[in-house]
Amino acid sequence: MKQRVMGIISSLLLGVLGLTVLALPLRAQKDFNMDEKKLIESFKRANPLYLDGAKQFIKGNLDKAEKKFLEALAIMPEHADAAYMMAQVHLKRKDLPQALASIIAAEKSFTANSQFHTFTYQEYMDRLRQQKEQLVVRRTQVEEVLSNMPVSRADPNFERSRLERESQTLTQNIQTIDSRLNSPIPPTFEVPADYFYIHGNVFFQLRRPLEAADQYKEAIRLDPTHGNAYNNLALVLFSLGNSQEALDCLVKAEGAGVKVNPDFKKAVEAKVTQQ
Image (cartoon, rainbow, N blue to C red; front, side, top):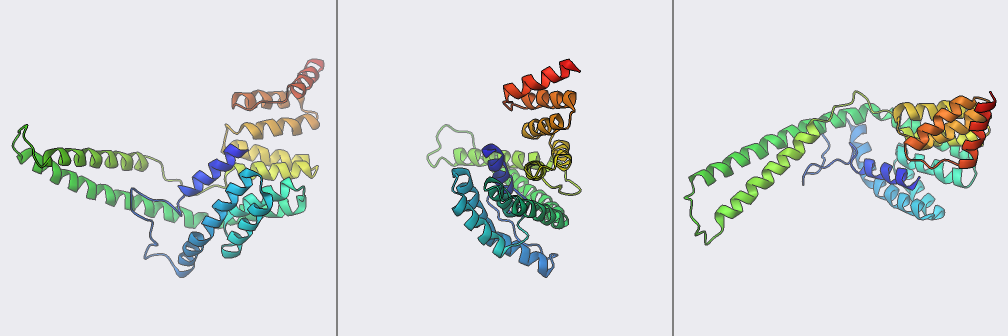
């Protein structure tokens, strides 16, 4: 779970609202309406609090984590990841009604902002192309100067060496931008698989297995390598009498690197054999 929490933090740090390209900051676009500009400003103020809370959560400091998440949500109620983490805080405390309310709020916030995220991502890609053009122009200038410099071992000012290093750096930066430009632009930003996984965990503890199964299946649809979702879905399916499906899920969970409970796996295998 800690690795998945860190994955959420990393993805948010690189997310469309906080993306940076080389040393250039993300700026609000002229086309943004007032609400969108306010959303960006709220995000800039709320996100450091969210990140502090996420660090405290990983350390097991639930009270400190909750304080930071609530501060972030007070500034930006639409901060989906802060609501997502609050759901986990409530889940650890066994406050299931609050956990359910928080994960539903997280999913709604993420969905409500999806159009804005998509537009921001497109603006980010356009900005990448502009930066690439500038870097290509600069590299051409550097290479032209290098081609006109006399080839000599004596270079007291190290000018050729400096220009060669600059050319190499420019080439590396251009390649970095190319790799980002090759990433497909998603038509929409779907709710992350981990949201559905936590939603499933809440339903599971509320003893609502059918709803839990639906959430785990959605997590798996979004992330076919989500081993924990496979593992927990196996528990639900076994409780519903679907032993073969439960065993299939356990195999997939192990394939994704999850260490399944050996006693549970033996019980599932025994039930499958009996059938």
